Length: 112
Image (cartoon, rainbow, N blue to C red; front, side, top):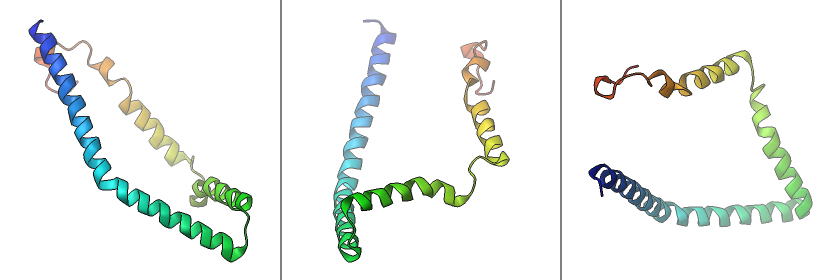
């Protein structure tokens, strides 16, 4: 096998191993908290439904409405400033590789 192929395969294996270890650590740290939070929220939902005598269907509808309304409580999302920021982000993050395509690898200093 060529040296370049061995290097590429090694980088892929190391990256994949890094991702697996990171996922295992994150799962070990966060999974118990997530289960406890889920149980707490389910108990709170049950208490609210029994306290106000709300059916499951009505509770689900109220939940969906509150989720849909949340973005609108801060005001109009697409004002000029927000739109300008979005357009700037699109321009500055997409297509950079095309700007650097003509640069020789040995002369690249990190700036195109």
